[in-house]
Length: 117
Image 1: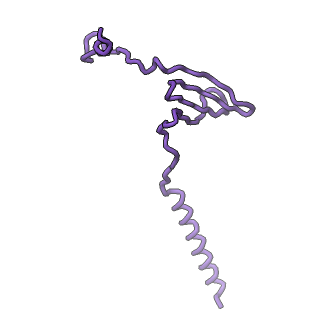
Image 2 (image 1 turned 135 degrees about the horizontal axis):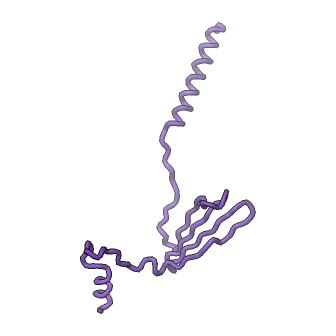
Image 3 (image 1 turned 30 degrees about the vertical axis):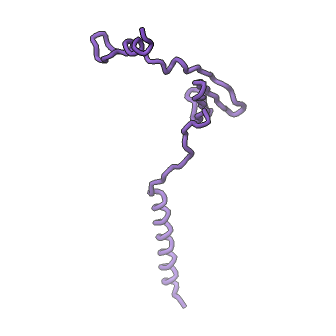
């Protein structure tokens, strides 16, 4: 039969071991996994917190086929469409080259060459 001191030593060892396991679980790096976002069906969607709207979650949806972008937000009582943007012209090249040069050929020159102008 084990003495009282033996039982206390055993319990102390078990407690220390359990604490070491818990600390190890806390400091071990974790890898987040999720679904891919390749947009093969024409839609990309993600969520986040919408700034300036209190405790509300946002859903961002991109229609890659029609180049539309929508933002919905959900607060405690309802889901609401915040806005939709037609992004068709967001992807059109713009010329931001300084007048002193820096981009050769310029975006305007490339547009003229492509359009035959």
